[in-house]
Structure formats: C-alpha cells, structure tokens
Length: 426
Image 1 (cartoon, rainbow, N blue to C red):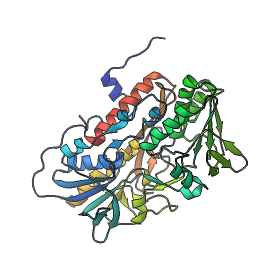
Image 2: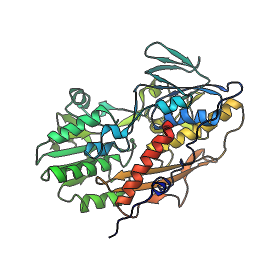
Image 3: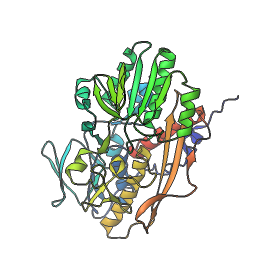
Image 4: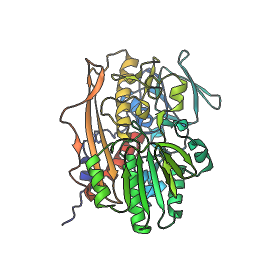
C-alpha cells in the first residue's frame, strides 16, 4: 500500500471540521475608552482562548488571566508521553503569546470570588476587580468516592495523571520500572468525566509500549461504565487486532477501594504492578467555593447563549466544569469553543448590545491507538431556543472510517493548531 504524505496545509486544514484556522491574526491596537475589565481564572484550553479572543475581538478590554502554573501543559497528546513516544517539552507551551496580545498574565492561585463586590482574591492577598469574570478551572477529584485513594496518591503508590504534568512523568517512570510479565491496570470512573475517549487511548498507548518493550506484560482496563464511552467500535477493533493477548477490557468494573496497588472491585480484587486510577470528577475547587455548581453537586449550569452561570450573575463558566449539553463531550476543543462563545457574548454585554441568538459550537477529538495511528470523532451542536440548551445537529459529525497513520498526522496537526489558537503562538 502506498503511503500518503499530506502537505502542511492539508495537515492543518483537513482535520475534521476544526473551526480555528482563519482566526490566527493579531489584534489591532485598542483605541477609545475601555469597555471594561475582565478577569479570567484558569489558563487551559478554555481560559487561554477566552483571554486571547477578548483582546482580539473586543478592542480596548482590560483582560487579566490568572493561572497557577508557569506554563501550559496539554492533556491531549500527553498519553503519548506515557508511552514514551513524546516528551513533556512537546506538550508544554508558554504564555508569552498572550502577553504579546495584551493580556496581563498573573501566575497565582485564585482563592475566593466575591461576586457581590465583583472581586477575585488571590492566595497572596492581591485583589482583582472585574466587570465580568470568566472561570475555567477544569476538574478536581472526588477522592472520597474510592476508599484509600487519597492516601495512595499522597504516598505516590498510585498516579492518576489526569492533569498533565508531574504525575504524567511519575506514571511513565512506574511503567518503565514495571517488571516484564507485570500488570498495568487502569480504572475508569463512571461518566461524565474529562475526555471520554482518553482512558481507552491511554490503555492502547501503554499496550503499544509494553508490546515493544515488555511483551509478556498485560494491560487490564477496569471500566465502571457498561461499555466503551467514545469511538466504541474503533477502540474495540484496536483492543482485538492490535493488542489481543495483551489487553483485557472489563466493563461494569467499578473501583470501590485501593490498598497499595490492589484494586478492590465489587465482586473481586485485582492485583496490579502499576495501578492507574482516574478518580471520579467534579468542577474545579474555585467553582465550588464560588457557588457555581448547580447540577448533581458536581457541575456548573450555564446560560448557553453567554456561558454565564445560572447561579452567580456576571460570572461565565467554561470547559470541563460545565454541565454539558446532550452528547457534548468534556474536551479541550469544546472548551476552546465555549471560550469563543463566551468572549463574543461578553463583548456584546459590555457594549450593551444583544448577543448571538443561535450560537453553534463544534468538537473534534483525536485518539491515538498506537505510536502513530489515530482515530477521531467530530460533532456539531446548536442552541435550541425552545429548550434553552445546545443540541447535536442531526447528521453532523461522525467518526473515522478506519484506524490509520494519516489520522495520526492530522491529530498532531490539530494539537499544534489549537495550541497556537488558544495561546497566540506564531
């Protein structure tokens, strides 16, 4: 079979409905009176994009981004770091592009939100007044849902690596030290959780590493859900055709307790050499502190015309913390789309003008099933005025026809493009 080599243009432009490519220009110099002050909490896919587009589209808006980490580290592509196919430097970007766009980037921890006074207080005591606030805090974990998990994480016996960074490297080291013939077990919580296909991608990428370096080792997937949650047929094909004899998938296998690397399920115990537990999740801590959580004590309800909180006026919530619409994933691409919807709406609100009455958001999500081969899913969602929610557009989107290396190249192109879009990279 002849290999195809797409051009850079094809690589970036052909990647499954990525609605970002004509939005990489620089903002014009602000002029006239300030429209207002916007503070953005969280510099991930949602917060960084919101900060950039408030400047790009809004003209003279004073935008301050508060982020606890000195650099942006991407969760998408981080599973390739676990497999040894990429390095942390490949998924790490700085915030200088946002500074060049006129965003004030502050490294710090947002501790409290005083919605009545419209101020954010940082852990170091600084106070930031705002006219509109954007909160994009990602997820935090419900560690009390699994007995012994908090202690095992504190001791470093178990890693979740569901926030890319030090735990990504720690889990990689555990894999490298795992004995030949050992067992890597990954525990998946009940949906919803950040990145529906992510755990299955991780299982495949780890299996690819073990197949090459520790061929007698096993990967055990303990899924609390009744079936694979995204790209089901394609992942099942990868499990069988690529990793038969190496990878075992067990549905309805909810983790109840851990003791070291012993996983205790409802009807059995599983002993692993490396146990990777992805904990149950909820909206980030600052969202809980600010009273933004409105659904199941876990997620933030929003007005889908503006992304404004249903609980706290003047506060817009983005990304994984939001209670999603039907069939809407918690993904980096969707956070980027939330951010653009919110930025456009905030600009209109600051001007005292009406917002877009029928916004559309799109999602594209790639998953690697080996070092170079990937699959994708794409969806389109439009606001329904009658139900006041975003609903999947009938017939939109779809999944890959097959697993192949072309998809892998598109996946890497998608990542480079969305990082550039969010962070104003050259």
